[in-house]
Image 1 (cartoon, rainbow, N blue to C red):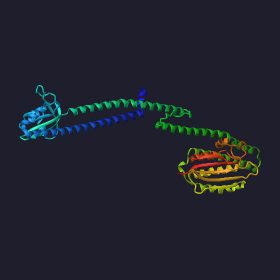
Image 2 (cartoon, rainbow, N blue to C red; image 1 turned 45 degrees about the horizontal axis):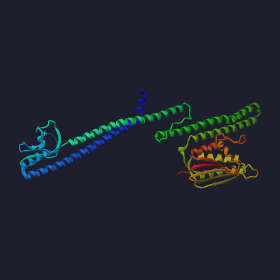
Image 3 (cartoon, one colour; image 1 turned 135 degrees about the vertical axis):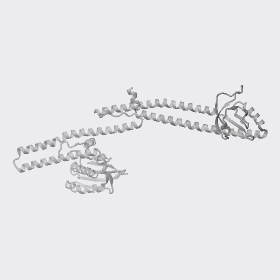
Image 4 (cartoon, helix red, strand yellow; image 1 turned 90 degrees about the vertical axis):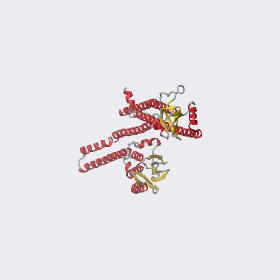
Length: 466
């Protein structure tokens, strides 16, 4: 009983019942409208026929008088399926006809009227007790004689009976099949929702690998399930990223924190002068600044991956931004003994966050300075910053002439704390490319690593506004 109550309480069942009732009302109304029009058409045809009969009988009266008209009415009254006739004299006495029981009000009205009558039995000449309905028309003859011609409404009553039966059968069929259809639809919808509920409960219990079932029909429930599954995939990625960040923090930040503590402890144990204490404090500040930069980078990555700042996107003049960065970093690149080459197309504009875009390009230039030293002795050192439009995309590239990154290690280089320098001799936290990738995803773009032969080309692809 509980299962039936749940089935009846589903939205699918309620909507199916509403559609069924609406269909029954519409079908019944349509049949009633058809029946009303059919009845009106029958009445019009009967009225025209009665008018033609009266006109013909009036002509016979003008030719042969009341005696000829009476004889014709008596003859026509005996024919099977004949019309209804009643000829009354000036005093209301019956002269000829095959009906009786017509009210005086009807006999005094010359318009088409619906009335009741009793018909004479042909065998005994007595009126039938049963009263029937008829459409009649009365015509006043010279001498105040009145002629009534009518037609029995049996055909119209049969039509009404047929239509009434059709309406009853139709409504009964709609109720039966509609109720069965509502039951089946609700049962299928309830089964799918129960499966989704069970999967959701498993996910809430901690199984993030679960996915909502998709039937493949492409209906609204399937579309909802697909959207929720995509959301679960994204949540799983974020949870995995959070786990990786936690693991990486535990491993990669433990060393600088330990070094910071050991440095402070050593200063307390061995320092004997102000200069030694000052040197120890400066090392502590330097280590602290590195940790702060690492945490700031992690915060920027988390915010970018969460989509923070999308609502505040504005039109960014990328050409002007890159020229400003080239002016700022140009002297540093040249001091490092590298040639700084720029190839920036004018008028490049995207929708985005100017500060984040500037930060990631600065990270790419900084990485090129750190790791772009030519591996071959005597090779020229070079950092190239370029920007161009291609296939409705903005391509920002930073290229160097260093050792590059092997194709099988490029995915690791983009991960958080992913450093290929296992010796950790060079400064850095391993978050630069991870930040660039997160900002690219925030701008619906992509980060691409390619071979510069020798060296590395890091390309940031951003979609241009329509």
